[in-house]
Structure formats: structure tokens, C-alpha cells
Length: 355
Image 1 (cartoon, rainbow, N blue to C red):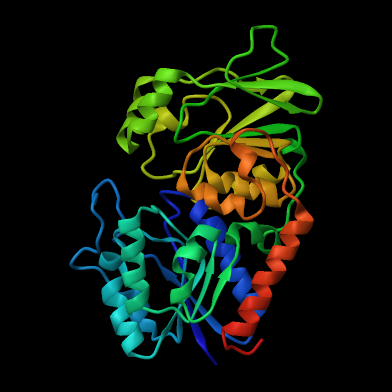
Image 2: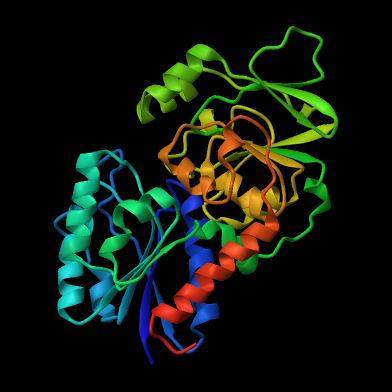
């Protein structure tokens, strides 16, 4: 029986990591039911507030090498400037012992030419047996360095297979607002005021989204500016938009700044993904500055609009969602099923495990 070590972690700083990791675990279980799948923690060397440059601390425990797996599965934005200092030591031991590297739903944090060359150096040294990218740029720039590569999709789009929608009546008349990177905008419906901000149409009504400019500028300066904005400015007493209830979600359980996270009513933060999925799946629409909040809502068949300029936007383009930063969009679920089928077939055909 083959043993697969599957990565989980990073939820406390971004619960969206759980969305694609758990969906990836489910897909592996579905495609390879005879394999033994061990869940392993992330490495501690990702950049953080206490470790800005990244790199594993000297006394870290190399958990994955204790298991001696046949395959190591990494997911998400693994291509980053710190990837050697995070994974080089463990991968040398693993691959010397015969383990193979599998990359699922992967993309990059940055796409500068110098960074692409670094990623290519990494892949040349640690060649994956299989790679499924989450955006076409990553596939075109790096796919040739894997033994088998697929221009795939982000695995958060498999979430409904792992965690089907549970209808919760209390949320079905809600608007999900997830603005933990930017200050929450002022949202109005059918306002008589002169048009300002970003407009869109929903349910036959004209919505407007307007960000506070200085606070938005401050939050975008850096991660420290983001927290400073949360510390300096209060929230809003708004708990309804038109006839819709508001539910506010924060994807960053840690570090928890109570004044920032709970400055407005009906706010939720949690270190497990399930309440987020229940809300995104039941709310009438989601407005967010997080790519994976939008992805979760969309794959449950709900509309979303995204307010972001992140490189992660590439993963939405794979499913024809480029305009999501300009207007409210629904996902073509038939296209999604087609793309999911391609990824499943690719895994079964190329990973070399009994199905």
C-alpha cells in the first residue's frame, strides 16, 4: 500500500488555506481509495510577523520525514522566494529515501522574472512526478519541469464534493462581507445620492460600494498598515443592507485583534473552515477582498464580487471569472464540472497508484 503525506496547515493566518487543502485530501481519497493518506503539518518557516524573511527555525521537528512516505503532496502558493529555506532540507531527505513530490493546485506568490527563475531552479532540483497548477501562467512558466503537468484549477473549487452545502435558513437572507485586509466599504441599495464608488446590479436593484479612501490607502501600505487601520478606526453599526442581514467574516484567526475583528456587529472569526463554508454557501451573495472567500461562494452556486489586485486573481481566470473585480459574477457550474473531471482523470492516469 502506498503512503501519501498530505499537507495541512496555515489556517490560523488564513482560513482559506483549509478550503483547498481539505478539498485536495478528499479528492485523493476519492481517486485512490487504497492508498494510506497521512495528514502532516506545514513547515514553520513561512514568513510571519516574528519571522519576516522566512526559513525554518533551527530546532524545528521534521515531521514528514518521520513517516517515510512514498509521496509528499504540497498545495497552494508553494512557489515563493522562501521555498528553498522552507523545504530544501526536508525534500533532500525525502527524495534520497525514494519519496516523490506531488504538487496540487499550485501557484506563485510573485511572478517577477527573477522569482520565476528561482522556482525553476527549485523544480530542477526537486522534480515533481506530477503537478496540477491553479492558473495558466504557472503552468506555462513552470509546467515543463514536472514529469506530468496539468493546467488545472484551484482545489477550493472541489469544496462542495468534500463539504456539501447544508441549507441553514438563518443565513439564506444574508449578505456575507469578508473585508479583513481592507476596511469595510459603505454599501447602499438604490441610493438617491450621486453615483460614487463601484456599482453593480443584483436582484433588480442598484448597489454601490464605496471604500473610505485614506483608510484603504493605509491598509494597502503593508500588513502592518492593515492592522494599524484596524486599531485606529472604529466600525459601523450597520447590521442590514436593504432587507438583507449582514454577516461579517474574518479569515485571519491569528493574530486576533479584537478591536479590529469585532468592531462591527454580527462578526465571526473561527479557526476551522466549516462555519465560513456554511455562510458562503447560504448567503445570497458574497462581497470580499479574499480570493478564496469568493471561490467558496462561487462553487456553491452563489454570486460573488472581489475587491483585490492580488496575483491570486489568476486562479479565477481559469474559470472565466476575470471580470469579478468589476462586477458581481456567478460561476458556470457546467464548466466547473468539466474542469474538475479533467483534473480527476489526470490524477488517475498519471500518479501511478491503484484507483
